[in-house]
Image (cartoon, rainbow, N blue to C red; front, side, top):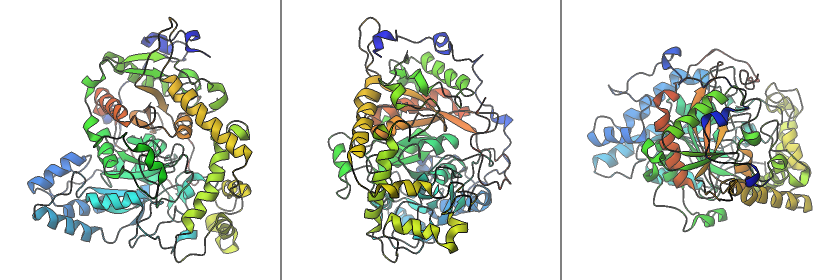
Length: 576
């Protein structure tokens, strides 16, 4: 449908809510309403809780804290709350030694940069050539030896970050099953939502998100194929940056799809997530996708972090159709529209109905669904074939393992001695109700890039890029005027379809906290742009976070903190 037929124009709040079936905007969350059962102790007299990268650097510069002290304080925090949240898959036994070496550098007047001594976790699909395992949560890869650090891990070490451990995740990044417990892996167990431990934590980078919001580390790193950074960031009430495919190297990352995989960052603020991004972006000869960034990246991304004054004169669009109309988004709409109104009050020009060209053909009316559409137009067709081939390439470089293919992995899960833990058959493991049907679907393709695959890839990329996000960013108004928007606003609804099209396009998306529902589960608002538009997205998202105010990120409530249910509940409280 052409935009001229949509009568899209500058959007008043009353026009936006018309037909949205809402009564009044919600109020900013009041932290006084949320009990904090696990307060974080001071770190040698300093408030490490919610301290950002810049604050920690001022302590290092002044000598008020050492890297070793900060690492020890985070280890104390992990001991305090991880028995409940289970966000940490494995701790790095060398962390304190690394911290001591970094302290000696500081004492000698050597500071590597803003990430020097910053404590981080990486998802368990990041290869770390040290004493830790890299398994994607699977028992099948326990004992395997990676050939080298993942490229982004190498960059983190160069930058002086302390990799405190591996974060828990959904096993095989949600590829193994279609009916499963989000955030669960046979190796790591169930990562829990730190706001309501009965609810799903978002995934697949579950531990990365909830380790940051609970102050186990300053920032964390994860991967996204479709939603795996944005979902846990939103459910953890923090910021998640999923960058353009090709901005961060995937070399040494246990893969899913070479067309869609990207390494992203988590922080309690856009600034912290941007510092984390600065540490890992760049060209890598082992990942040819990073060639696309050449000539398109700035010196750093943290320079674009702004306050609310930067919002004046910016233009954003709301692709209302299907992306704002999902049934799980319905109870979030008041807070989301209040956030939009705050943006307008700060000078943002908001345009409604900036929809994707073929929105009905590419976005499921029932929410997130990467299997939506016929096989030759479906994202999952591409991902299934890619996973078969990309996994084999990764496994070929491992030492000390007999797992060399998807066939080997399926056989491992099916082995009688592994059925209870890995659930190769349906209903044999509580966390994997459908067994390993996701892996079997990929196995059935044998990695053959046939005509159905080629048609699906062409369709997904065209309708998500030129006829999707880029189309929506350049609407033609009723008077024939074309507007060039800075970003699109999409609800960060864990059950919504908001991540599907940016994932297929390989385009960037940033989520910021907006509210918490009656079940203590957070949700957010996402800023979506075209390829390599991270500078404007970081500017907008950071300015919006400032405009929304600090009350938007209520600290974790640990509601039902003794919960042990597996599977976890899927978004109870977000449905009508």
